[in-house]
Length: 193
Image (cartoon, rainbow, N blue to C red):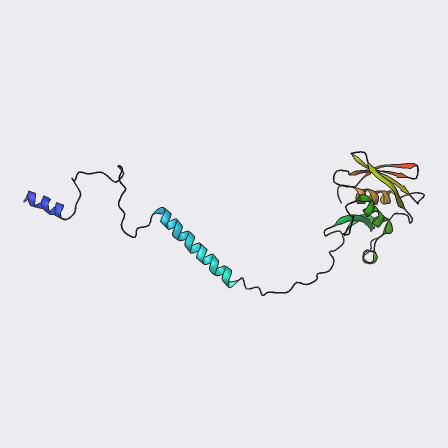
């Protein structure tokens, strides 16, 4: 009776008591057909996400197509381009200007000395600089912009700040100003602008 039960167990496919290599001892473990490994699950998940993403892209996001339109000029003090500094309510206000040669401080100063344009004047901008002011020469000593001006008897302190802020560059932030043969000192643009 005992031997019959052992035979019955062997016949039913039990592996207890069988000698042979274990699954981790050099031979690959057998998997059920259709069983997924960790990599198989990851591939299936990635494939599902890519399919979902493709479906979303093909259906669009519901925003209708439109043609480009002109939004007008950026507001004063903002926008891309080189900055000129005018006066608004007794304080400096920057205005972005674009055009050829605007990277050069002398070009920006010539525009500054011409004053605010019609739109800027309509928005309340003015200048503290005297009429007739011109750039006689401009150079650098490596740390400062050396600026010689002519065409006026004097320049108020707010006007000197307009010049310093407009003429300043990233590597030449200080501006030494001379009016005719009279030195007006070295000026820097306030850091809170």
